[in-house]
Image: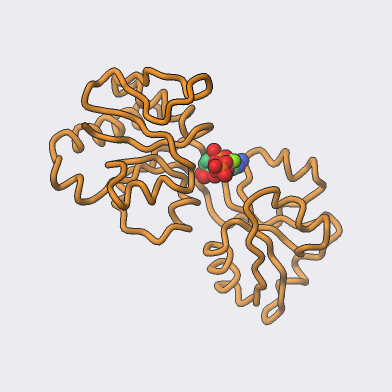
Amino acid sequence: MITLALSKGRIFDESLPLLAAAGIEVLDDPETSRKLILATSRADLRVVLVRASDVPTYVQYGGAHLGVAGLDVLLEHDDGLYRPLDLAIARCRLSVAVREDFDYANAVRQGSRIRVATKYTQMARRHFAAKGVHVDLIKLYGSMELAPLTGLADAIVDLVSTGGTLRANRLLEVEQIMDISARLVVNPAALKIRREPMRALIDAFERAVQERA
Ligand code: ATP
Ligand code: MG
């Protein structure tokens, strides 16, 4: 049995067409079922539903043999994973945003100091270090948009897809840090031990991605 870790929501929804293109159907709907282990049309493959940020942990420790996780999640996780494939789904970008009336250019002059709230502390730290900006990071787990509006921080580092949430909160995207998409991650030991079925599955994903490109 091969175990594939997915998270509910956009990763699951956008993985379904890729699985379908690989001839795999998931036999339960996570929105209506409370099951966390889902059977598929292939007797040797099951899906486990985990929190998006827990996918790398499951795959790293062998609770799942492979998984689908956003590059954002992977870069915040200290690796130990084989990352063979960009699935080109769940696309967005990691950006810096501030209040409309905040002078970002002035705030990030060389040697200056800025307060940044984010869920993505590792990536934010790297980004501002590369710019030579001192940063006080405030770790948040959600509703990042509130931080500049309440005075908690000068700026946020967050994922942006359409920009609608930023606009609704009168925030301005002032810098794009990187493009993000979901990746297939694989447990290296599982790939060694179950070389044939794992390879076949990875190849099927790869063909599905190419067909959709
Ligand atoms: P949880 O909701 O469990 O706290 P999460 O917010 O990371 O976790 P999702 O909202 O399902 O989970 O996002 C999963 C992945 O989808 C993200 O890790 C990211 O790679 C991608 N993604 C694409 N667009 C966006 C967006 N606009 N906001 C957040 N994530 C996005
Ligand atoms: Mg979410």
